[in-house]
Length: 251
Image (tube, rainbow, N blue to C red; front, side, top):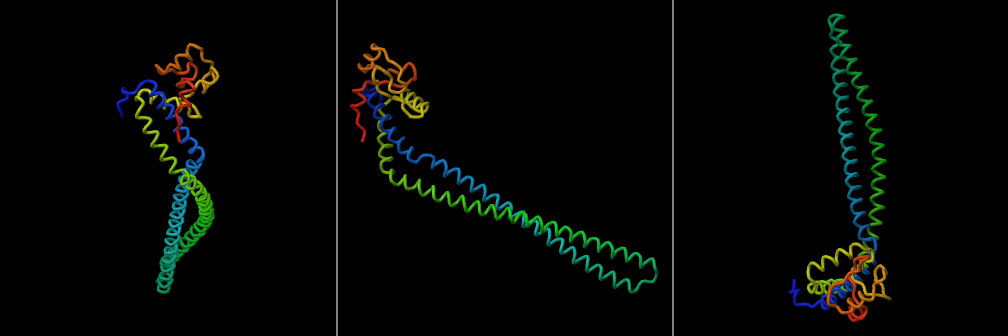
């Protein structure tokens, strides 16, 4: 930062006015962008979330499919055991062995029926998830289309005003170097407090140019003298006289 102490109050006020005018022009460019930067950011976050959901659904479908494959293998194993037991039944020596083999066959048949039920239920679950997945994919495609449009609009505005915005940002930095840190902090705080971003205003028709609160003649005289920094007692904005305000030209 430059040696701020080398600048007079009038020079500081002139720099503040210049800074205000420059940053007001930067504000105008931001207004042109409107809500687009936020909308683009929100859409990107939303699409990222939708992609994560899509991946999660696909993983769930794959998990269910693995479960189905396990049950199909279990059915094959049960069928193989049934054939084995049926072959054994041909060589039984007594009714006791025959009953034992029949019980094993019945158990495997129950295992097959249970596995088939699990497979039917799992296939129904997959069908439901496929519908959800299809909706998610369509939603992503729609959102990406909107994002592409809004990004295009934003990029067009940025490209149109990029050179001008860079020039204003450079001018703003130069103007800030001529204002002491404490005063600059107050100016920035005031700007943030008001939607129009006005931290420095001229006296208009015996009133504050920001909040239009009346300013006494003695106070106006002090403002015109430019010997000290004077703020509006109502809104806190930094006040300057109209001549000084108009003398600062920003291109």
